[in-house]
Picture 1 (cartoon, rainbow, N blue to C red):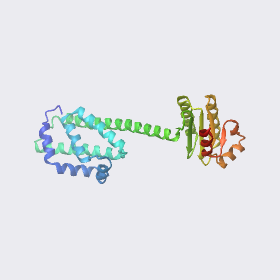
Picture 2 (picture 1 turned 180 degrees about the horizontal axis):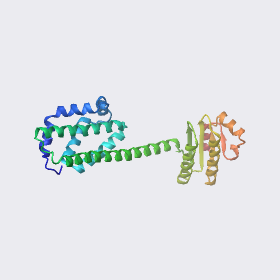
Picture 3 (picture 1 turned 60 degrees about the vertical axis):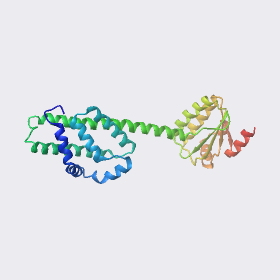
Picture 4 (picture 1 turned 60 degrees about the horizontal axis):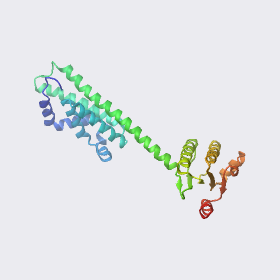
Length: 273
């Protein structure tokens, strides 16, 4: 702190009363104190030691170290998905505990900071608020990046195009297929056909129990798109429920793609030929 306050004596005072400091923190953070061991185990985050570190950065006015520490904490809490309510309560407990010790220090030193009280108040609160601000921004940005990475992974896994020859690929579809997934399917399939020069795409639907009308219609458009790119689509494993739905809708899949009963039949036909 850029004040007449002797920061070294203040830090020594806090260190000499370390047990009281910790007790005060735990009393102020009633919801967090029962989670300290759990947070340490989950994210290797030592709340007590980190509180001491933050207090030191605040008192000594180490701006860069404080911001770096806030970023580090933001990434750690986002990575391990620890509830933000615990962090907010803990930092506010640190703020209140620090003020308690400033008051006690002032009393044992004959009120050395009376004249600078408002400057000290502004300095401490600004530093705590700055830590929280950097922490939350970093947490949010890192969380968004994790969500995007997970989403990309899910999208890639949801459209697993598997090359079996230089010109033939398999696309096994498993689980629920909704409009969101068919949009991903359309984009990925057309990109991969162009990139890999796929001439035959075997689309296995044996892992799909049912498809909504809009999804079937979109699937037909995807097959039209593959045809425009010079790729033949082969449908295998079409379940009776899906076929019946297509018949009711008046859709003729065999006019748009070749159909075979099983994936094995398709492999036998195209690999042997």
